[in-house]
Length: 223
Image (cartoon, rainbow, N blue to C red; front, side, top):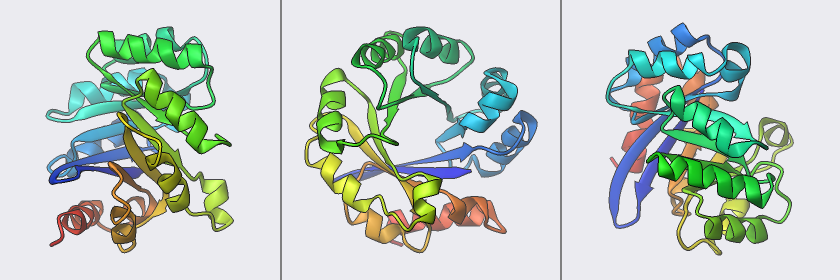
């Protein structure tokens, strides 16, 4: 489970995205409803999609009100078709990998936008971050997400330097940062002024996920 916090420089527009990875679709909807007072977006993570398919996205969409639904498909190919299917099952935001071909990125952006939806490009495993981020920005990605995966987190990697690199070349896309961020370390990430901050285990492993989500929101708002 991950939490994404979205805010805009100058005025805070706080969006909390709860990404759920290791539950079934019924448990995911139950958890989402517990925190929906603090959450604007709920993500059905890749493991749930692998285990249960896009009906998990539909189940969430049918059982929660007032939030957007993100399908973390991490698309690599047949992008317009896969985006169209995620949207058919209720997704408002869909993810594609930054290492996908330009043709796939372009097709995914076009499919999302013609349906009034958004595309998040996940930069995990991208080697030349600045070059690729600039290309993705020009291709019309709504979000570009710097992502330090679990395996690299275990080796002590931090996403902050990658965030700085990507921010330096972006003109239009929103920039996200993902990887090992916790409620008690979120302020150092916020200082880098991203648009999206992703909090993982600090929320997922909390005794009270609602209280943890509120703690993150309060940190962002400087309370």
